[in-house]
Amino acid sequence: MGDFLAILAILAAFAGVLGLLAWLASLARRRRVGGSVLGVVDEAFRPTSHETRIEIQVQNERMIAAPSPGDR
Image (cartoon, rainbow, N blue to C red; front, side, top):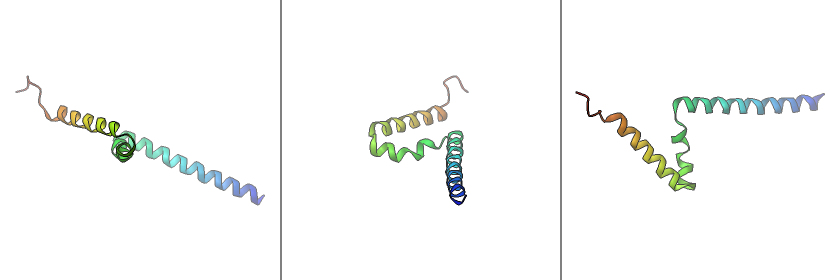
């Protein structure tokens, strides 16, 4: 019975950690912070991907800041 409870406790802890990670992933997706968190990994292992992400961020900032030509 003691072994069963130990295995059950380990499985419950594992499920809790996975649940926490899933919750953090959904939170990161809603707040759109995933790109900045993984930017270090992209820069180290996939430099072209990192450069592309930076270019996309720059283009998004330009789109937000620039008024359209018809605005007065």
